[in-house]
Amino acid sequence: MNSSFIKHKKKSRKSQLAVIQTKFVIECLKEWTPEKTYEIVKMSTIGDKILDKPLPKIGEKSLFTKELEIALEQQDVDFVIHSLKDLPTTLPDGMCIGAILKREDPRDALVLHPKHVGKSLETLPKGSVIGTSSLRRTAQLNRRYPDLKVESIRGNINTRLDKLDNGDIFAAIVLASAGLSRMGWEKRISQKLEAEEWLYAVGQGALAVECREDDFATLRLLQPLFHGTTTFRVLAERSFLRTLGGGCSAPVAVKSELIGQDLSLTGAVWSLNGKKMLKHSSSCRLQYREEDEDGEPPRKCPYRMPKLFCGISPGNLTYRDLEEAEKLGEDVAYQLVKDGALDIMNEARNHNETTAS
Ligand code: DPM
Image 1 (cartoon, helix red, strand yellow):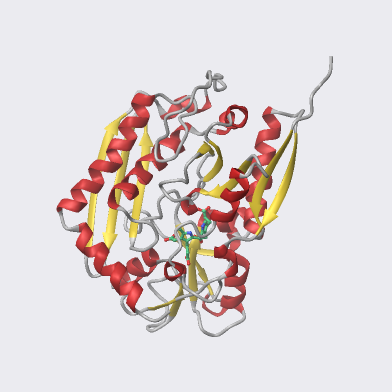
Image 2 (cartoon, rainbow, N blue to C red):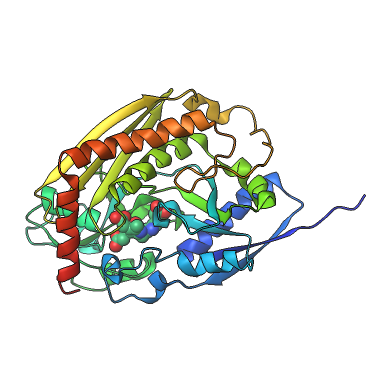
């Protein structure tokens, strides 16, 4: 018998984190398909190239994904690995998320300048400068720590740590724990920002694989990578963000959990100075159980043109549960809209557009 070697090309951004994430996904895939070979194609995106402006000011939605999606569309590659939080809630026509991997710690982390080691956001000297270009982090810092200053910092994680350690501007920076731990830099985490009071970005900590919606061979290949619990949580989060019309142009954040069969979501929006905040929580009951995760290997589902849920292909999860998760996100968003979220978000957006970078 002939064994076939199918070459699957996958695209990755050039940054070190993007390459680590891509290699990780290939290792996971190889466990299921030891006979296949994979080739990595690296490229830079707008988000990697424009380093002198804060992210929200570049004004392009798919900062880290656009060039990669063009390569997908032209069939130069078969799939692309992303941090889920960088993927807009609406994908370009013909594209879908073919798998979502198990989420790592979704919390933000504080990384201190070496001279402040041992301190925390509570104990840093008044007026200390914290680096971030995230509106979500800025608003939460402004709200909870009005004595600290927030300034923009850009570049990939390596560059940011370098700017922190070898400059005298920043006392600390806020980064996602997941990115730091994938890079092997957990030691630099001085404080995890607790999700009770500090919420994370939609999709933070989860990896997603994007592919062509009608490429059933790739969808089937990716299916075993799906992590059900993560998928329900991030679907509720993405549905919340899509309903609000967020993105990175306004401070929006979430927290979610699946305990047993209960899926819960907290969503919040802030004004940029953090003074106004709206927050709402709700939950729903799934048929899926969190404990199902480590059960049987996923069954192969017959491929049909999949219905997508915020861009996510259903894998072998049931439509009923996916619809519940999607509705939970909508419910939390509608409640915030009722409370005046759109005014707060517009104000933040206008402010962001009119201030100099
Ligand atoms: C998005 C944001 C940031 C990234 C905005 C936000 C952070 C920008 C900044 C949408 N994408 O979180 O409010 O702090 O200046 C990004 C990181 C990761 C994926 C780095 C990070 C790694 C973590 C993951 C940049 N995208 O947030 O520290 O895979 O979730």
